Amino acid sequence: MKKYKAVIFDLDGVICHTDEYHYLAWKQIADGLGVYFDRNINNRLRGVSRMESLEIILEKYDGEVSCKLKEKLAYEKNETYKKLLRNMTPADVPVEVKETLEKMRAAGIKTAIGSSSKNAGLILQKTELACFFDAVSDGNCITRSKPDPEVFVRAAEFLGESPSDCLVVEDAFAGVDAALAGGFACAGIGDAGAYRKAGYRLSAFSELLDICGVE
Image (tube, rainbow, N blue to C red; front, top):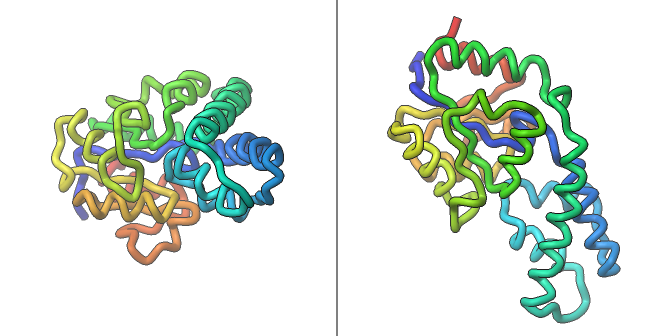
């Protein structure tokens, strides 16, 4: 089995779970607009940019929304989300995830974050995980969100590795599609663990150790 030189992780839903915070922040925006919003709609927002997420929510809005108002709504959502993120602690990271990362680092495997979120730095700070990653590619350094592969391509560049030597770990279908489009192997976990396009389908995060040849 191939041993990868680097592993690139999506953040939300893979390393830690912030879906509930996203849901609460977007629901506040939707409620203010009088737009129906539930957890099924929220699942459609996973792996896509903030503005694209807003457009999905506005599908159910009966009226016109100016570009200026869209920018205001996206800003308000992010401010609410950041306030909620401040409640995060290292306890929000599963023990299995931290132990797996520690073993990867000890084995000399490079690691990076590849996330569309512009708040990756804040999340890594609050969960005290920044020391586990050699690079962070996030919404602050890309112009195209998943399923475009840019975020993973940039992560590989930061690591100094080619896509063929990197494994991407994703929990969203759009993320798996992005990885494959960029020439990366991809392991699906969570919802993406059942995605037929994922090269590896994980039922547990620690299975990555076997995939990467880490004892």
